[in-house]
Length: 325
Image 1 (spheres, one colour):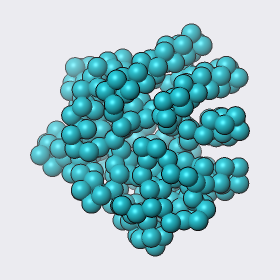
Image 2: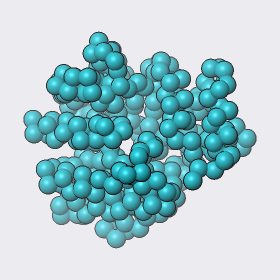
Image 3: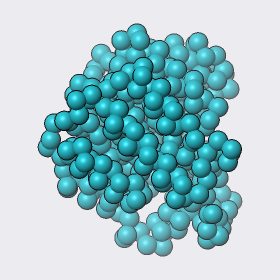
Image 4: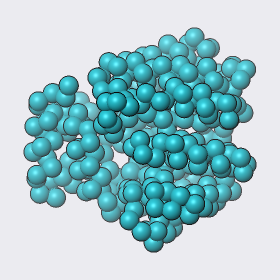
């Protein structure tokens, strides 16, 4: 159950003027422009972090909007190349038209992934709500069959179907499967997902175990100590870790600009000290960098979809020294 305090913080924040929401979100969103994202990456590069860049916006209403996202991501690729950032791309499939015109949406994603492949750049298909879980996985499988293996998806631990999806992708892709695993921000219906914190954590940890066992590349996207501690124990049991080659016999080939079979991923502005602790221990850590004109819609939607964020907002406001980005 979400605490009453967190709910109050969210309810108050979403009713505040836009300037206040921007003040709150500036910690978690690079800004409205690509230049803002570039400046953030320049700053965090000095800490040894790597990145995945997300242009904010999803579930477009016309295919003309998909053209904007395709062109903007091409600009992102060019900026990454120009500044030689250790970065890849995160895209929302619905922003490319997957819900409006699945075939054209696939074609748009294919074009971007193909261009990224020319630059040895990876593309992560963000996982949105349950309406597009299957279609997002279908896109990954279709592109892999075409030889575009620089693409992977996100799976959400909270969904009942996730272990079956891992088995499905293992069957189709083997060690070439490349995941970001997270608890999941979308508050899905209780008939298809876990809703209690402990159940979600346990399900996410079970998914991590299944991914490691399948030889997949595992990007553990979490700020939760129970998930991080479980991952560290799993790595030890497989003989994996900083400075070691991936010893799993069923693992895929080494990935350029990737870790030895795994990495940790965290949102911009969230639990920076924990991220630096993992980095200092030698683990590859990737920071999720969102930017775009849709920063306000993104911020409000995330607050409404997952009120537990309210605790992070309050902590950043009242005790900023405890959570330096």
